[in-house]
Structure formats: structure tokens, C-alpha cells
Amino acid sequence: MTRMTRDFGDTMQKDAVPAVSADVIFASLRFPNYKIGVNNQIMETKGDPKVLSMKEVVARETAQLLEQQKRMSVRDLASKFEKGLAAADKLSEEARLREAASLEKHVLLKKLRDALQSLKGRVAGRNKEDVAEAIAMVEALAVQLTQREGELIQEKAEVKKLTNFLKQASEDAKKLVNEERAFARFEIENARAAVQRVEEALQEHDRMSEASGKQDLDQLMKEVQEARRIKMLHQPSKVMDMEHELRALRAQLGEKSRLYLRLQKELSRTKKGEENVPHLYELEGAETLGSYLQIQPCSDNALELSKCSIQWYRVATEGAKKELISGATKSVYAPEPFDVGRILQVDIISKGQEITLSTTGPIDPAAGLGTYVEALVRKHDTEFNVVVTQTGSDHATESIHVLHVGKMRMKLCKGKTTITKEYYSSSMQLCGVRGGGNAAAQAVFWQPKQGLSFVLAFESERERNAAIMLARRFAFDCNIILAGPDHKAPLET
Image 1 (cartoon, rainbow, N blue to C red):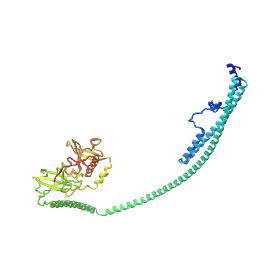
Image 2: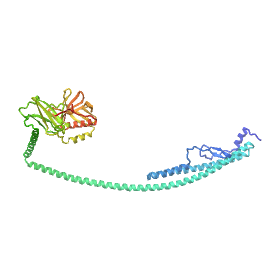
Image 3: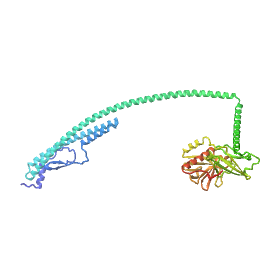
Image 4: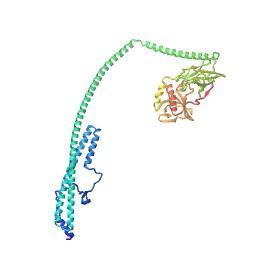
């Protein structure tokens, strides 16, 4: 048996194995990995399991297109089919390249087998057997390559079929897109025509309105001129006479109203059996919220009010317990919202004699006040212009302040400076001023906290009563009863 040396092997390899032709082009830079299985069969190693085959990719794309066909618009469907068609063309091109690479592999295997056959004739012994085994492996590899070519041909046919399907679908989608585009253009043209007709109608209406407006203006100017002419023809003394008559009627109406109240009071005294009681004092004023009641002497025997002891009460109904109004010890008292629906009484102690006066009926609410307060409740914060007439230190100021009544707290400001700001609490008090002359109907007593109090004058009686009702409404929402000092002090009648 001939023994081959290293030099001989190198020489044999250089002389017997011809060089690969330069015109051979490999599909990739890495040769496929093979291993010898049972009975010397050549087996191709499996690649990465995550990499899908071309057939699986095509099947998955087709399924996704068919699934999304129902919920996509025509334009999106056409775009998807065009992308699928491009992908099919790409797959077809890849199949063609793989077919060319397979052909190149065949050429390479043929050259390799020819080189091994040539080498087999030049060696002997163990080397010859190795060469024969290599030739068998090359032939087995050629068989597997032929099988792979068959699979590639089948995949190429499927790809071609899919390409034709996608081409047809793309053409149908384009046809649908064109039809939808034509329909949309038709609708747009109709809409534009409708808009143009509406614009023309509006322009015509504007022209007609402008013309009629000018005619109405001219007619109105003529009527005004005619009225001026008629007015100039009449004597201005007639208008003055009418105004004087109206003032006289108002004065008579006021006098009749006072007389009516006086008669009502006398009638109530008569019903109570007070005919023999000397009539020394009487209550004057409208018995409504927003006005004030004043004790007036009506007899020469009446003692001056400054020398009398006075105390006001509120009574729910006749014969019921009367509730003392703390601080109401003046001859003037302005009803507050809490007095609405109740009878007001005043006790006058003069020369040891107690005289009781009362309103003819319950205090009436102010007209429109409830609606006004309901409108203010919708706001988060309401501002009222006030004047601080008295503070806890008896220091008055005539400058304008702003009282904020909010849903959670009340605040008094002067410009940008906050005088006081307190949340609703049990120590806070708010009520009408108990006394104070003619201005009592526009003033309130406010104690934000212990040791600090103000007397605030509002711009009108309506603003004063609205502020009281609004603050009590917000305080009640915070579970706080907001009232005056010694609010509930019932006494037996």
C-alpha cells in the first residue's frame, strides 16, 4: 500500500483539482450546512425556526388581505392589493434568483464531481476510498438539490398564481376606486351647485332686505318727522298738566294706602276689645320686605320715644309664642328676609304702662326678589358694593368696599386689599340692622368671627336682602344656620 507524504498531497491537490471557473456566481457567501445521516445520506441542517418559508409568508399575507377586505375602504383595499402585488413580484424575483442559484450549484457540483473523478484515477489505497466516498456524497447532494429544484418550481407556480390573483384584484380595486372617485366627484359637483344656489339666494335675500330696510327707514323717518310736526303744533302746557295730574294721583294713592292701613289697625284693635285703651302710638310704613316700620306718636299725651323702653318681636301666628329680636330696641325696624310670613310686634313701656303694637298681617315678600336670588345662586361668587358705616371699634369709613358672597366663605375687600375673609361657621352672624333710621332697610350687621363685626350699607334694599338670602342659602348648604345674635329666644305671649 502506497503511503502519501504531505508534499505529495499538496502537489496532488494543486495538480488534480482544477480551479473553479470565474463565471460561477454564488447566491450567498456561505455554503449550506450539511451533515451525514443514516446510511451515509446527506441531510441539510434546519435553520432558524423563526424564519418563515416563502410559501408560509405568501399564505399569511393572502389570509390577512382577505380578512381585512371587509373593513377596509376601497382606496385602502387597492393600496393593500398593490402592496401585495409588489410583494408577489418580489417573491417571484426571489424565486428566479433562487432558481439561478440552484443552477449554479448544479454546475459547481458537476465540476466538483469531475474533479473528484479525475483525482480518483490518480490516487490509490485509503485516499482512493475517501475520494470515492466524497463522490458519493456529491451525488447524494445533487439528488437533494434536484428535489429542492422541484419544490422551487412548485413554489414558483404558486407565486405566479398568487401574482395573477393579486393583479386581478388590484385591477378590480382600481376599477372600484375609479367608480367611487367618479361618484364622489359627481356628489361634490352637486354639493357645490347647491351651495352656489344657496349663496345666490342669500345674496338676493340680502339685496331685498337692504332695499326693504331702506324703505322702512325712510318711512320711519317720515313718521318721526310727522310726529315732531304734530308735537310742535300742540302746546307744551298740556304735557305739563298731565304730569302734574299724575303726581297728584300718586300722592292721593299714597294717602289712601296710609288711610287703609290706619283703618285696618283700628279695626284690629276694635276686634281685640281695646276701645277704652288710649291710642298713643302707631306703626307707619309698608309691611313688606325692603321697607321699614317706624313708631310714631299720635297723641299729645304720648311720651317721647327717647324716654320709652322699646323691644321688637316676631310672631309666627296670632296667639303663638313671640320671638325676641335681639338688639331691636329702636323706634325704627327694617324687616329682613327671616321676617317674611311673620307678624311683627313692638312693646313700648311708657310711664309704667306697656303698649303693644303689631302689623296688620304677615310681612309680604319683595316682588321679584326670589327669582333674582335663584339667578345669583348659580354663580360661584357674587359681589356687592357696600360702604362700611360702622366697625367693632366704632370707626366708620365712606369709601366703597366689595362684599364677596361665595359658596364656601364671605370676603370683604377694599380694592386689592382683603379686609377679612372667613368661611361659614357657627361663630359667623348675619342679619339686618336693628335700628338706624331711614337707612336701616339698606344695611346689615355682619360678624365674621368673634371680636370682629361690621355694619354694611348696600346700594339698595334689594341688594341688601339678596345678600342676606344668598349667604344664608350657601351657609345652609354647609350645615350652618346663619342668623343674627340670639336668633331663637322665644317668649310666652
